[in-house]
Structures are given as C-alpha cells and as structure tokens.
Image: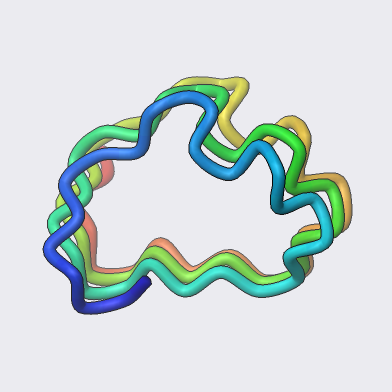
Length: 79
C-alpha cells in the first residue's frame, strides 16, 4: 500500500487480514489512524509507516500487534 496517497485508516480496515505478516504503508499522506485501525493483525511482524504525516496516535493503536518485531515510523511529524 505504499505510494498511494492514503490519508487515513478507519476502523476496521484490516479486520479480515489476520494472517498478514508484513504491511508497508510508507510514502503516503497518512495523518490519521483510528486507534483500532490495526485490530486483528495479530500475526503482523513488520509495519512500515515511514514518510507520512503522522503527528500522534492513540495508546491502543498497537495493542493487538502482539507479534510485531519491526516498526518504522521515521520521517513523520511525531511529537
């Protein structure tokens, strides 16, 4: 999903993708991710969200990502 000019992720965007292991959302325009936007991605190991417009996110955003090993949030506008 990289390089697609995505601006937001709403709930439940990936609800039926529980076997997904890698998600690349880099180089979009993501400024908003619902705090349950990654719900059910319990097998996700790699999440790349580099080079977006993220400023902040909710505390529950990564709660269900229990197998996450690599998270790239570089080149965002996080506080």
